[in-house]
Image 1 (spheres, rainbow, N blue to C red):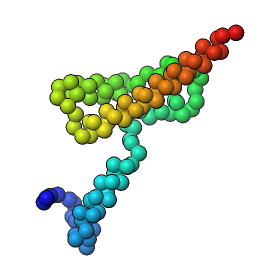
Image 2 (tube, helix red, strand yellow; image 1 turned 180 degrees about the horizontal axis):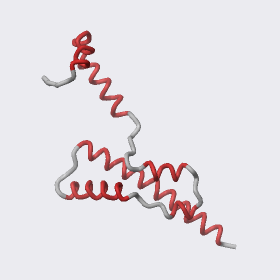
Image 3 (tube, rainbow, N blue to C red; image 1 turned 135 degrees about the vertical axis):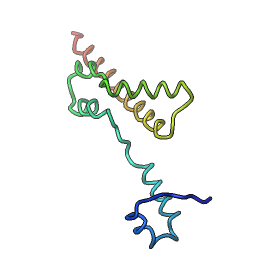
Image 4 (tube, rainbow, N blue to C red; image 1 turned 45 degrees about the horizontal axis):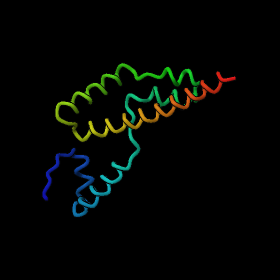
Length: 119
């Protein structure tokens, strides 16, 4: 397959000496990019709260920010109307994973509250 890319002059000058190995460089770069830990845009607040090991009441009160709610609504709308782009799909998977973690944290918080209320 032939692929044409437009890159900056600076990058082009760095690539010229390794032109014969570009396919290998792209393969390695793609692997590294895919293996990189997910970026949790819009989720920092939730993660920071959970990382502070808050009391159960604070965990149960966790809610997504307005910006995060809007992003999730946008993704849901795209999903219903025909699908997500590759970038949107990655975002969607990240949000689902964080939601799963928050649900686990909330379930444990609810159990803690229940056990502390029982004599």
